[in-house]
Image 1 (cartoon, helix red, strand yellow):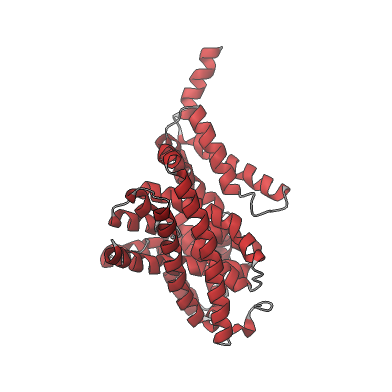
Image 2: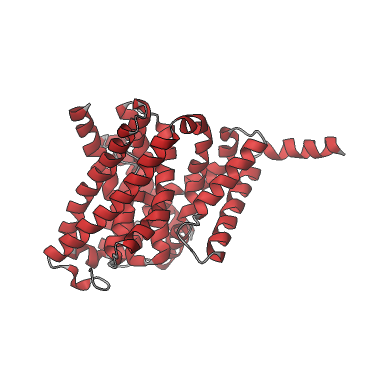
Length: 123
Length: 239
């Protein structure tokens, strides 16, 4: 288990180093995800301890956003002032983005005729 | 007696233990309620936990920084958890390979819709420029969104709040919208949620289906990349 945690942190560290060296506008952990993914592709399977630690983290992913979310208390007065515009932008944009992206994705999958492997019909 | 209690309170609130404990407790409570109410997307555990914690901090007059001293241990795990998203990606690699072109085109399109529609609606409602910049990268995962916002002259900490609110909203109304429009393909459903609602949407997608979770995580990563490149370029063009 310690080995798996070390592996995850190691990939993250490599990702941070890569960002520091290249100045790319990406967070280190996203690069770390690419590094781990590449490693898994080369290795050809997921070691059991890595699967156990990762799946535990991912099952509780929502928990990890709570500390940043509580930061809303720092901006309560600004949100109070502009709440109508902010609420409209957040709800409207989120709904539009979800529907249009799904629409394009389903359309493109049909168009490129690669949907055979996916679950269920794409209607 | 009263002096004794307030001594204990002072002692407890000065150590990171109390706020770490409260964070976990609020999450467990939110999760319980979510399960009890049939895992309905509108009962979002993150939202419940955030409301409870903000209320406690305001009532006890605790500054956010004091809270964060305890909560930072949870916050820190976001990094390794993001790295761990490589696993669902790896498990779904054959499915991703088959849909590579739809994926890449949908990311660019989704990134433009997510930023463009937020700015357009905010502008129509006449919100201030700093708020407008801060809300533009709202669909991108927190650290990247904060970086973009800072580069364009927004308020990074306000962006973080918009990002979390967007994630919660996406996890709440995203599945309802997808049901309304009868999208049944788990890959497309997860992908759309990941574009619009980053990690919080991915957390929700992961609970529903591993295919949806993998595509959601993929969309989150690619959208961070696409928006980090596209938004600063477009912003220079339009403003």
